[in-house]
Length: 457
Image (cartoon, rainbow, N blue to C red):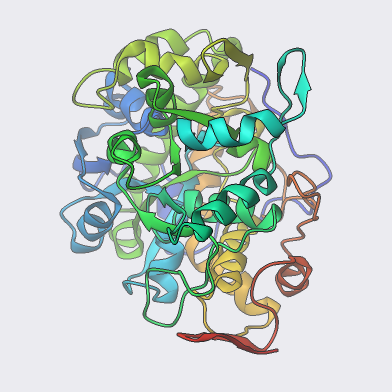
């Protein structure tokens, strides 16, 4: 395993604290052994499927049912309402719920499920319009491809009196923020949210709308949208159906970006600390299995995920992105060993700085309507992301030799300054307001959004 410890990125891990954490660190104590967890049909739900199918939940004394959900809203409501004990979640969902955007609820994310795993796909029509202008390398388009190539396409649509529509999966999804980041970095405004509005189309050059992941290819084929940002296997499905071309992966937009989390209600973790710790241990073991020995288990994982009760897509489509390769179009398959990372590079650790990045994007596009000081962002992140719970579970596994001790980072919860964005703008999680100010397109200090546009500042 190429597990990389984040040496030198802060002080040593904070010791777990609080009664819930002390109980979670204790052996045994499974208060609720029968559990129902939710997921959306995407390959990055793999840690849950593997924890179930390889017996890691059972090893921890848990009888877990995994239940696919129709869309992210249904999944979120299921966790909040208690029909689900936890779920494969968008990283932005527990954060948004905790600050009261959309739905108010106290949710936590004690574990990050993976890094990377998404891509942005455009229709064949759009691809045919942009490909002739792309620089080539070895007979293939040079990557990463900037959204600036869409500017003449968007202008052409506008001249015809038509909006340029693209899809993403949920207003607080990683996909929304990655698609917006890519568009803005290429000089296109993806639009702002007004208070109480989930459309986010004020001043937009490109109109973004919500489509559930499995429905993305059909929506593209119908011509309702001209492109989308989604997780796998729904970009590779467009390639297989010959209806679209992935133009960039999220790893090219933001190198090794955090993707999904394991989310649950805060009061569940407090009421059932032993159960929570057992779930985390099982998922961490599954994450390790997925990344073991350079991905030797990925072919087996693909077979498991292709089952109709999990992702339910063709094995070839899932394997096209999950086994170290990524296909952009027929004849253009490239090595992508880091497209899905589940355990290596501290993928499971819930870094505060990751949560803060999502909050900066919520403010950037108006989902957070007012300015807040840096400490507010840090406090919100610490309320949701719970490395103390992660560490209690991971250290227990390391003490037993189940995972290597150097797979657990020594950190204060903040990554070093991140220079992995395609536009080379550095991100420092300790300075969210300075970061927001540094982004060319987006709200700045003192600005607000109204139906007529951006004001103030």
